[in-house]
Image (cartoon, rainbow, N blue to C red):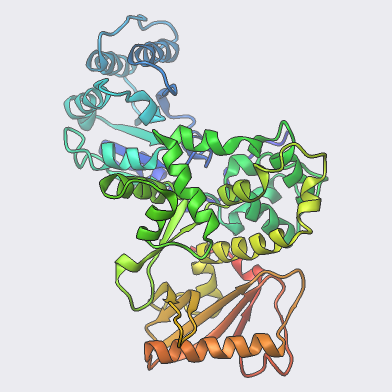
Length: 481
């Protein structure tokens, strides 16, 4: 197997590099979903600098976590540090202090605490011990303390916004996201895989840009064959990843899954009240916490409607794998080889592909702006929703780019296996949509229709004078700063 080098992550590499050069003590929080590459990033940048490292054990007791801590301390000291059983986390961090002092290292020291939410078991006193370590000793040393965790909401609430001794102690933050299309392409090229962009797009639509998932792809197989192997075969990594994914991030994860399933059924999105009703989760503070945790972890996204209050915001399921699992994997696990090739010929596939492509476009707005030549123009991206009644038809536009240069781009996103040809009916629909939007909003701005498709637009009499800009999937693959 080809060893994977670090792809992308330019801003994150700069943050970690600057901390290493900084003369002061640094505490860096690294937050990101399971298997997004947090540990790989940190170990790659700090591989020759880490003086102590520990990874929390999921579902372990306080005593087991402390035992693990001391075993690692003994390993890093190469047996010279006594493997003593600490009575609490204050004493454990005291031992860590003594070990680091013994090293008398001239370069900057690095301590890496991975999967912090698992280390900090309920009422364990771990955060108190970490606060003691930082405030009583580390803050005055040439040291970097990297704290890392997959449970984004826990990390933000318990550490970043800590009310106690860690309050305002984080000096640098990294929110590590899955790869975009450009990074995914670079990742696959680094592994010597020869996929065209249409194949890469299909892979991304099924499993997103999570590096660990992409690492399962095999050379010599098409996108469809890889998806079939990874997602549907008995030993495929993503065949049963769904439940593991949520249970590793959230307590009472069944409730989070209910929200995800509700959004999977309503692809155009749900308001908060609609989401609570459909998922049957309790209203009030509990529902707000669940929704916020899913937002912070990147499974769902919130879109503010054009010209309306924030309370009318729409929530959408934007985690590619979760949608793909609910739509296809969980109900097709007992079929023979090649099931994905069969499923990809069904109407359900066409519906899923259209939505998945829309969601990917919404995640690549910087690339769309670059293609439009407006990277330097201040813009706001939003959706437009108008409910219909007996007298008026409803209207939903999934992406509007409202620009400060007195222009609004209405973006229509269409997944198609070849160049798109606009017929008379489609042209009429587009014109009515633009007219309806202008009438409903009373906007004075110039409105441009931007069409974003996989392979572009085949010009004809219906497209001329209607489509102002036609973009292709290639524009989504463009790297942006």
